[in-house]
Image 1 (cartoon, rainbow, N blue to C red):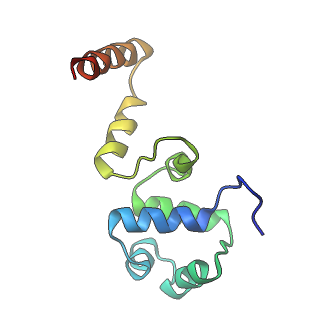
Image 2 (image 1 turned 30 degrees about the vertical axis):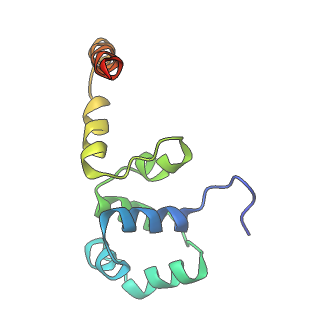
Image 3 (image 1 turned 90 degrees about the vertical axis):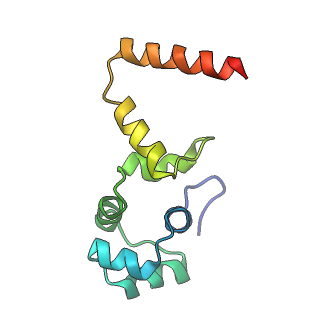
Length: 110
C-alpha cells in the first residue's frame, strides 16, 4: 500500500503512455517485456522491479530521472521538451546562464 506523497510508478507509466499515445501492447513490443506483464502491472497497480524500469525508459527514450520527473511541479512529457532538457544538460554553466537570460527576455516581452 502506498503512503501519502509516495511516488506511484504505475501511475507515472500510465501518464507517459497516454502522453505518447502508446498502448501497453505496443510498449511490450518495443521494450521486449511481455505485454501481458504490463497489463498485469496496470490492473494490479504493482510494479515488480527496477530491471523493468530500465527497459521501459529505454523503450520510451527517456532517462530514469526523466521518468521520475512527475515529482516536480512541471511535468515534461512531450518528446520535444525532453530533447530540449537533454541538450540543456550538456551545456556548460555559462551557456546555461545565457540560455536562462534569453528565455527571461522572451518571457518578459509578453
